[in-house]
Image (tube, rainbow, N blue to C red; front, side, top):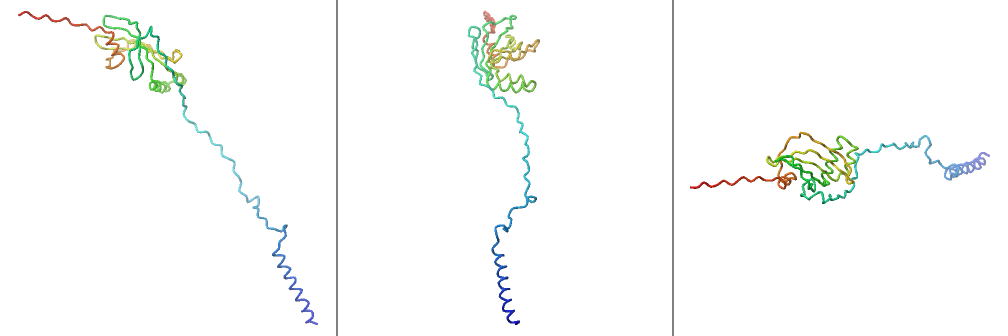
Length: 205
């Protein structure tokens, strides 16, 4: 009897064991392992940091200035210098026997315009923007022909539309030596009358 029961029980146990192994090998779709990371373990996305814009120094896009030649009925060409092309007024005022007053008109170069903008910017930013249109300068010089000295009495800066950018008036300016190869030197040579010394008479032997 015991042998019969063992013969029946053993095959049944084997069947149950094999069935358990099969279930472990074939997992239903509902029992598939979840490969998703739990929400509480997922990395938290940090919001982007608001970056402040980089502040760059104010840069002026300087316009291209088309220079206009002065009225040829009033101004005569004098020559070119490092700071610009110069003209002089045909009306020369004689202050005394040795001193004359001359007006000059200078069409400024791009380098002078740029340097003037930087200089004006130090004290007046708004005015320096207007100097982007700086086109010419008119000044009045007194020249001492005998001593070869000069001094400026007035200087006016203009934009390309003829508007005054700045006006400077000088009183009791000290006299300065006239540098060679300058506009003042050309004016001195052109308008100062050189007084010729009388020839010495030869003594009769």
